[in-house]
Amino acid sequence: MDRSKRIIKTSVLGIVVNIVLVAFKATVGFIAGSIAVILDAVNNLSDALSSIITIIGTKLAGKAPDKKHPYGHGRVEYITSVIISVIVLIAGVTSGKESIEKIISPTAADYSIVSIIIIVAAIIAKLLMGRHVKKVGKEINSGALVASGSDALFDAILSVGTLLAAVISMIWHVSLEGWFGAVISIFILKAGIEMLVETVNSIIGIRADKEITDKLKDKVCEYPEVHGVYDITLHNYGPTQIIGSIHIEVDDDMTAKQIHKLTRAISADIYMTMGIVLTVGIYASNADIPQIAEIKKSLNEQKEAHEGILQIHGFYADTEQKTVVFDLVIDFKFDAKEIKDAVISEMSKKYPEYSFYAVIDSDYSDS
Image 1 (cartoon, rainbow, N blue to C red):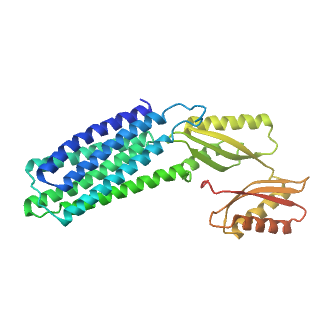
Image 2 (cartoon, rainbow, N blue to C red):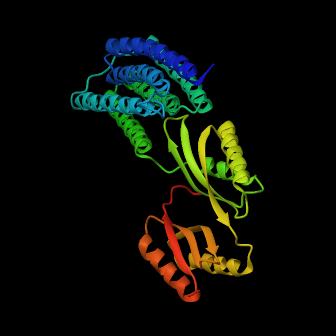
Image 3 (cartoon, one colour):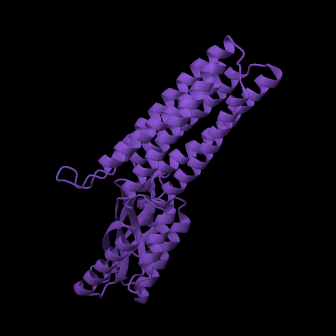
């Protein structure tokens, strides 16, 4: 079964379970006069609505690329996540309002043994569903399902609070409905805010996952012709659509034919093993020449002299033209131009016969 079908199947299961829970909890809540149980039912209703939106988003995200959207429609999943976040926030605000009113004007709830059994069954159902949905989400790299699964597990914990309120009400006839409802609403709001922030960060563009960049770097470095991997840039066009680029350092005497063969092999390998559409750029290296090796060593010492330098790469010295080019990766917290000028000035003093040129690279990834 492909990814989209699994997401839809799992979401449909979530809808069915949540609708059943809404029916039972709402019935118990209205009969017993429990605001906590009613808010718990509202929370399940928002979960069901979220699953419906997830299905719609998955269908739209699965559309094939077209002329207007050549990168596909994968980012639609982010849009649906924003909608789900807003729904969760609305549910949290509504729950908070109702809970505050219940705290101000408390009324004792009237629970029965049947009510308690239904609440316990609902907790068990949420735990089982949460574990299943989260497991599937991790297997197919679906942030929406992982979030839904985590939310379901968290709902089960909140429902335990509702159960405690019911037990306390039955035994001691003390109404804690409003207070438990307020706690539930706070956690609903927290979940909605976290989901919204995470989704907005994905839309804006966040740092590539270090686990992915490390794996990519290690994979490319397995090729004996590659002396280093730099400038890893990955763009996410949906959970399963990553397009990126890298630069590899190779000997400067490689032929165009050899470079073509190498870069094609790397691109195909990375796509087959990691699903990343990768463009491979080239840095030529001639640091095996003693004189040039000395210049490169002196340049690398500048990294220790300047705190803001994270990496120096792309080094190439032309002994005929008397030029040295290299890239500087500067920490975002520092003035990149100031560091660049300082490095060039110091290297020019040490090797006045050479002209030094530096390109400032952004710190896109940890590799």
